[in-house]
Length: 221
Figure 1: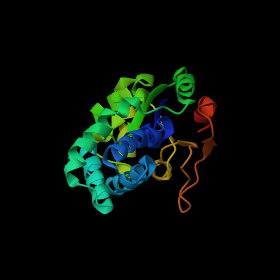
Figure 2 (figure 1 turned 90 degrees about the vertical axis):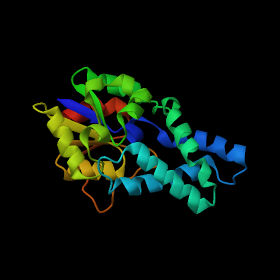
Figure 3 (figure 1 turned 30 degrees about the horizontal axis):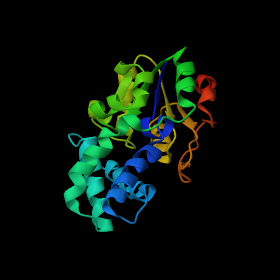
Figure 4 (figure 1 turned 120 degrees about the horizontal axis):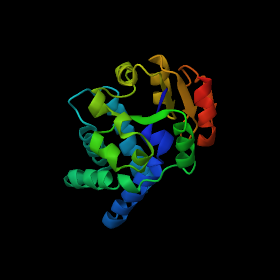
């Protein structure tokens, strides 16, 4: 069996990591927003763009456009967009993993091959701390698969990449949980702060609140 993990919700505390960088930008420029406020505005546009994105659009393209929209809404200079996008991408290697991740992924890896299933570009995935915890051959990105979450295509293509092995996906965000389940993937929800299940969507068959419980959880699905 192959177990994939969502990169920026299940494994990485992306809001904390990116907010630190955005707080530095705000301080340097005298902007009134906090790093968290800037992150939430950018992240909201990013997720909205991903809902309709398709190849050959890259994650970099989406992130840049999301930042341009966020800065425009806030009245910030659009001349910063390219440099700010690069600064965020360059910082990804410093974004923290959730504290339970290293041990939890290692426990799953004792019995199964482990990988990532993420909307990012290949190069960005390689920069993250999570990349070192998984099989690099199983880093299933939107760039590699030619589709974006939460569309069914990305999950179907991930399952095809895993074949003949069975694919189980560990998700945290509402859209990832719903997308994986509706695409027919066996799914485990790893509960993370700031993420809730979609009230109108399917319920995950198995939920855990600590990655230490994932080895048992993936066996149950």
